[in-house]
Image (cartoon, rainbow, N blue to C red; front, side):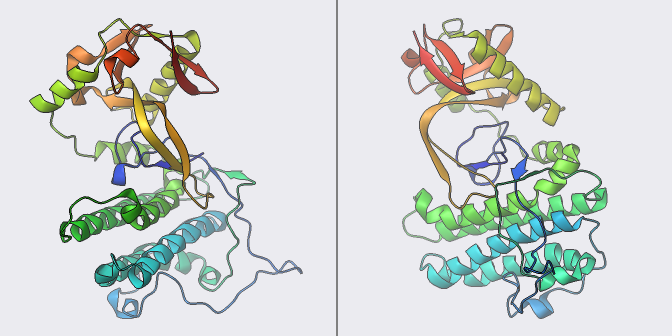
Length: 342
């Protein structure tokens, strides 16, 4: 399942601490039809179109090359993002002062994502789209979307996610109290997740675009303080063992990471997460998975070399809350979930 997570559980950090853990989705993208099997249409206002949009953007000079099924999928998720942004500006006192900026983002979504799609599939602008469903698994291919379309969709959707991130940071900076809870950030996290799901068709069809996203994430320079924190929590090298099943899981994961981002130089990572939440494209809400051990990867340049252990020929970094929780223990795996025992 293609999921967004509120914690780092994959190769590298994305917007809002979200991470991509896989890139397949479960969706029913059949056309909306009436009982006599005709496409249904209903007058409606596009949720991404605000009063200012009609003059905000000229008509795009291009149209998408995308299958109807994938066009529906993209429209569904960007519509959901726009509804979240509008509800936040209209109903949430915290975000009410940011309503003009939220509307501007919706206008941007309409002008750069939806208008080119509607030029290719005009009836979708007024069609009653089907509800998202988890009954079917669909993965876009190069037959479904052209490279130029995929590249533009990926670039624009990434840029829009960054706009939401910057707006959230701006809004929080303006508050007297600087600390923001996850609940306060949730609407913007949700909107960002929907745009991330919409980008799936581009990343499915052209995996090199997925690698490009990670290449463009700026690496934070290591600091003496950061290195000291890694050394403080890392168990002594050679003190942690992996069961055969855990080792196989780690090897499979790191191989996948290197396939997805060939230019990356990654080492495996097992760490303790106090809470884990994930959401797939067809999920109504975030799924709370509680605390537990998680598997991911670090760029080699992010960690001091002396905390990189080697177990079964696999380079790995361990970050427990306390070194004693792993030192002398065995990390095991069952049903792709990690646990620790003596």
